[in-house]
Image 1 (cartoon, rainbow, N blue to C red):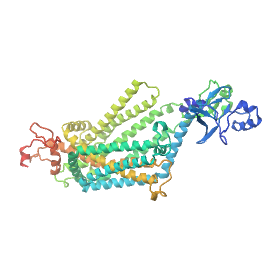
Image 2 (tube, rainbow, N blue to C red):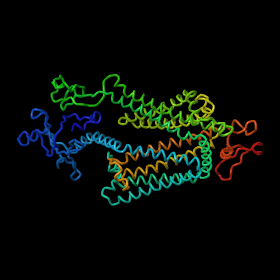
Image 3 (tube, rainbow, N blue to C red):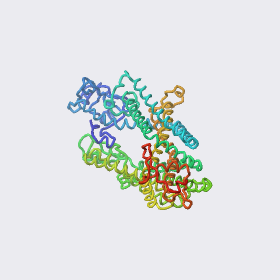
Length: 625
C-alpha cells in the first residue's frame, strides 16, 4: 500500500522493506494469524528478513512473478476487483481494506519496471541488428546516388518516374494495410479499440488489432489523395519546374564533385553528434548514489539522506528502529550537481550551434560553386578548376564569422523552443488553462520564427557567396530580392521543392518496404537470415529515418542548385538588360524557362492558360533577339 504514494514515481523506490525470495507467496496470511500456528509460521519465516528476530511483513498476499518482482494476483469477479478471490483483505493491523486499493500501488510499481524492460529490449534489438541497419543505410545511400546521377542525364523522365513510383508505393501501402485489416476479421481480441487497450510497452500488440491497420490505411489514403490533387492542379507549373531541374542538372554536370559534398557534411555532423552525446553521458553520469531514510511509522528523519554503511549504529536508527537506509536515486547536494540541468542545456545549445554551422557551411559552399557556374561568361571555361574546393576555401577564410553569426541566431531560437518544451513538461501537472494556452502560443510562434530564420539564412548565405558582403546586408538584399519576385518564388521554387520531396519519399518508401519484409520475416528467403528481435519495427523505423536523412542530404544538392540559380537569375535581371553593354549571364534555356514568370507590369499581357504566368514587357533589344 505504501507503493501507491506519489513519491514512488519521483524516487523510483517504495518506502518499504524489500528482500529477495525463492518464490512468490501463493496464499493469503497475516503475521498475527501465523503466530498461532507453528506450521504456518515456519512458512511465514521464509518471507522475513534476518530470520525470526528480523522484520516480517504484516501480511502475505497471493502474488505472481513479473520481471523478477512479486505483484499481487489481482483479478475480477463480477466487475469487482479481487485478490486471492476475495474483494477485501486484512492489512495485518485489524483493518479490512478493499482489494481495489492495491491497484494504484501495482500501477505505480510497474510503470518504471515496464519502461525499463522496454528500453532494454530495444537496446538488445539494436545489438542484434545494427549491422543489418548499416546495410540498409548503405542501400539507401546507393539508391539516392543512383537517382541523382540519373537526374543528371534523364531529368524529365526521372521526375515523372519518381511521381508515378511514389503514387504506386503509397498505393501498395494502402493495399497492404487493407489486407492486414481484412485478415484480422474474426480474430479473438482484434476488435479492441485503442481506448480499451490503453498504453502498452509491447508495441507489437497494436499490430494485432484492426483499428491500427484501419488508421494506417486512412492516413496513407489521405496522403495519396493530396499528392494526386497537387499533381493535377500544378501540372503546367510542374512542366516548368522540370525544365528548371534540367538546367540545374547541367550545372551539377559541370560541378560533379558537389554530389559527394553531403558525405563531408555527414562526417562533420557525426563528429558534432558524437561530441554532444559523449558530453551528455558524462554529465548525466557524474552523479552520486543518494540513500534516504524509509520508514513505516512516524519518524523525524523520514526522507533525509543517510549512509548505508554505518546506518545500523547511527542516531537515526536508534530514534526510528523500524527505519532503513535505502537507495533513492542518483544525484548530489553540491553546487555542481544543482546546476547539472543548466550544463545540459548549455551542451544542447552548443550542439545546435555547431550543427547549424556545419549545415550553413555546406549551403554556402554549394552556393558559391553553383554561382561560379552561373556568372561564368563562357560555361564552363571561365569556371574555377575545382569550384567546390575553391568555394569551401573562400567560406572558411572570409566568411567564418558570417556562418557563426547566422548559426547563432538560429541556435538561440532552437534552445528557447527546447526550454519551452522542458517548462511545459515540468508544469504539466500544475498548470492552469491560461498557462497551457500561453505556452502553446509561444511554442507555435517560435516554431514559425525558426522556419522564417532558416529561410532567410539560406538565401543570405547565397548572397554572401555571390557578393561576399556581411550577414545582415546579405540577408536584407536576399529578402528584398525575393519580395520583388514573389510570383516566381511561388510558381517555381516551391514546386521544385515539392518534386524533390517526392524523390525523398520514394527512396524512403522503397528502402522501408525492403526493411519491413526483411526484419518482419514475411519472406521465407530471409527467415533464417533475419535476426530474432523483440520489436522488429525498431530497425525498420531506424532504417526509414536514416534513409530520409541520407536522401535529404543528396537531394539538398539539387535544392541548393535550384535556389542559387533562381537568386542569380533574379539578380541578373535587375543588374543587366540584355544589351551589348550589359548582357545577361543566364543561359538561353534558363531565360526561356524563367522569363514567363516575370513580375506583372501595366503593359504586360496575361497568358491564356489561366495560370497567372505573366510576361515581362518586351524591350527593343528583346524584340530584336
